[in-house]
Image (tube, rainbow, N blue to C red; front, top):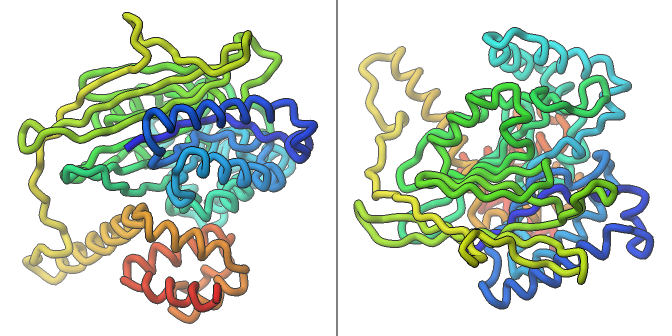
Amino acid sequence: MLMLHISDIHFKAPDCLDPWMDPDASIRTRMMRDLGEQVRKLGEVGAILIGGDVAFKGASEEYDTARGWIQQLSQISGCPKERVFVVPGNHDVDRGMIKKAVAIQNVQHAIASAPAGRREWKLSQQLRDKLSGQNLFEPHAAYNEFAAPFNCQIWPDKPFWHQDVPLGGGVNLRLYGLTSTLLSGQEGEDDKAGDLYLSPLQTVLNPVPNTINLVLVHHPIDWLFDGDAVDDALTSRAILHLFGHKHRQRAVMEANYVRLGAGAVNPSRHVKPYDPGYNLIRLEVEGNGRDRRVKVEVHQRRLQENPEMFVPIFAGQGKTVFESVIQLPEEAEIPRPDVIKPPAASAAGQADKAGEEIAAQDAEAALGDEDKRDLLYRFWSLKSGQRRDIVNELGLLEEGEMKLPEPERYGRALIRAGQRKLLDKVAAAVAKLEN
């Protein structure tokens, strides 16, 4: 599979609303033309991974422009529009909203000021509280509206997303979109390195047999308060780590993981060096049994100013491809808690609960299937009232959920539909409304 990794596009209103007056438009056009050339050489793209900062100030009109550009990118790269994945960056957070809302400032401050040993507990406490949890995610409202058709929205019970994509050779690629922006924009101000917090809640990355983990996150490790712990977790639990934010393309190719930094599609034109860029990543499963392995190839492209064109970044010794081979022996399946017979009634209740939680996680991961993502895309293309009628008719909402923001409300409903094996009925209802 060939994947396109981009970040920091920075659609900035009002400039981006008029393509003839947008000073960054020509760079995006050159990038798309170069991408088209690479696709002709390497084959079509199977997934587009966007590492945040789609917008500049988290405004709805910026995302409106971004949608059109991403559709162009999908067409040029040959990537199905249902295989676009995105995480939020600091520019996808509405800092103006934070500056005006004391309630949002309070919940961010409560987490950020907690002692190191209690910060994870404080974050969990704020997420579990209905009011505080919603306040924490409110500055992501426009991002969530944009991300919902890609099934990449986030909310207090689900501050990150994960989706499975088949690689072949009996291997699944599990994409984890982690949220590094929960504490972005404190007091409405810019972030500083070390201000942000990911937490162990997002880095569990529970291993699944015959599955490799890819982590997509906006902020690099040195921007995180818990950077050392995140570094240890990712190094042990994921073979691909994709970052943005710093506008610096880097490729670290280790024996057990690959770590990439994305160049910005549109970095600030007033900061030197000015290096727009993008990454192409190819994953190929080779061998079988104990000798099975994953071959990773990385093509990094950057803008050359004179003449203005995209050129390769060299990997050394005249090579234009960064390469690594990571061992992935075949693994046996692990028994699930929901099929283990408990010895007593109390244990039965615990096993049932554990089984339900795993079923919900599996249901979300399974939504990475291309057909299911196509259904989600079509569902979100309906009018709000039509979406409401479908989930109500199928009983996919629980008490109080109608009051939630739509990206969370219907995101919960669709995961529940997968868990209850009702996606076929959702598909039938969507098709009926489309006709």
